[in-house]
Length: 114
Length: 109
Image 1: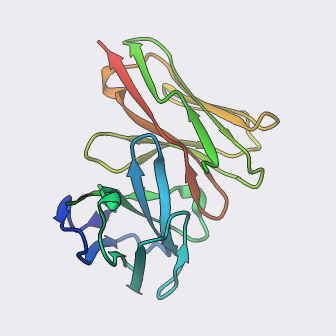
Image 2: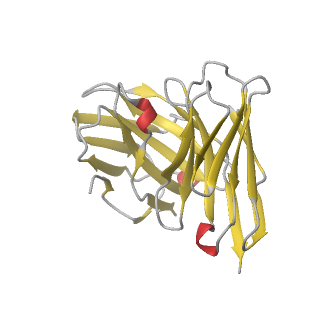
């Protein structure tokens, strides 16, 4: 069964910590995305990547960075975690030339920053 | 600024009833309009999708109606079941996917 795997389901971190969220997909997708999900705001795009070592800012990149060293892995980094980054983080992937196949999402990481 | 506006925020329907969720968009460059279904503790999963050259698409009890001139599209769930209780997101794709705010659907037995 094809899937997107996020390394942690739940994470609690302290303010100021550097946080790494990992995402791995096994579908040979070129595109990978990081969203955050908040009630009433839906899914908001943080960063995305169309290829290895390539990244693009989404709508809310402030306070985040990303790394894509391998095609299957896309990491989201919170440089200095703050309480307003408490949220559900969702990773997704898709084919570059077949976007109409939709995105495949991971199960999410619920991050709490205290 | 939300590029895709979704309503209602929550919806309660009796078993066997019709659930209707509406979305509107501004960017005419969007060329693919999917709906995603999300159960608690899970990521969103693709439910059904439509291209703008089609006015309606039906898959089982789920139907998308698309009005290109009004820049609106909607999801209809016929004969709604308790197992349909979930959060539904509409979305629109051009270079990347833009999502609505979500609708929490509760189907009462």
